[in-house]
Image (cartoon, rainbow, N blue to C red; front, side, top):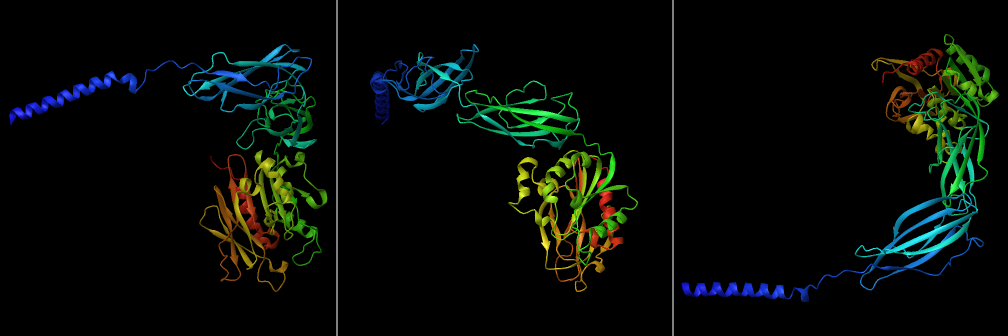
Length: 490
């Protein structure tokens, strides 16, 4: 038995040794000897043909090529070129880039009247071998189709707020431009302010002008020029130009009251301009202030608005306000450390999607969401409000501001069409709805709040102060005033 087991082991060992010999001896036949793969060769198709300086091509040239290899597959191509500006005696180089395509429309830089383009294309196989020589062709191109530059914001001859230092909400005077080109696409923009040198080229179409870039920049009139260039490095020979007046918002004065209420007949729920003026002047009798009647004097110039630290904008005609038409200047005012109180009668319903005010979003941001920090707003039509509940700064005690029933129709138990809000982060609600009907379900809804950040503060009220009793309106105003004038720790 032992002898049989030993024999079995000997036979198994012999088989293993024999297999190794066979496999080793057959290695060349089974696997094959590795041998050097010759790199591929590159061929340029004869379209378009090389030309002469006397017959230059347009800078856009469609080239075709192919790779040839008898031992591997073509994986792609490395493309580069050098552009010579023959008159200026300058040149630029396109770094090699890889593509799997066998043709491409190339926009050659052609900033000079005559330009020499030397193209090099090298094929690469699937082993990573690259044609060491490649295929070259020389073209001559001419300059044409300069781009046309536009400054789309701000408008020509407009005033803009300007600060000595950058802050969180103000990076500088913002200039937005665009350009069109018939040739390929826009490669960059450059800006020139007054007699300062042209800026470096940038791909971004937005510029910010501030004292970090222009230390000697001052208030007053300034000329702004912007030029674009396309991928052929052809520049706009007629840069876009606007003149701007830089206004430094000093905020040296106290309160400015902006009356945006329509002058009506002086009847219930339709007060006259004189009635509204008298009410608010009395409301702020012990608060130094100036007045601006929007309906009579029109838009407020930045030169005026920037003088005031606090602005109280009220629109007490139901569903009527010029607030949406002034989001630009009010955004600019807030961004430069202004403080704003806004109130009105169902005015936030005017901020409709698709209305004219939305055109400003691309320049200033969303006024309701980004500045006032209103996530959502609605109008309470199904109920009447008899009182505003005011939460004091201690967040514990409350005061009450009743509706003045002498200013509304006798058959109403309270004020209708009051705006309520869902509010964003860092806001503080302190005006709340109290319904004349205990079953309405709106009691406790937020109808007024404050917001602050490191640079500005504001208060929003969805109820018009004019329709509160004088004593109630006084409480509401003083609560708002307290918030706006407070120096918050940061």
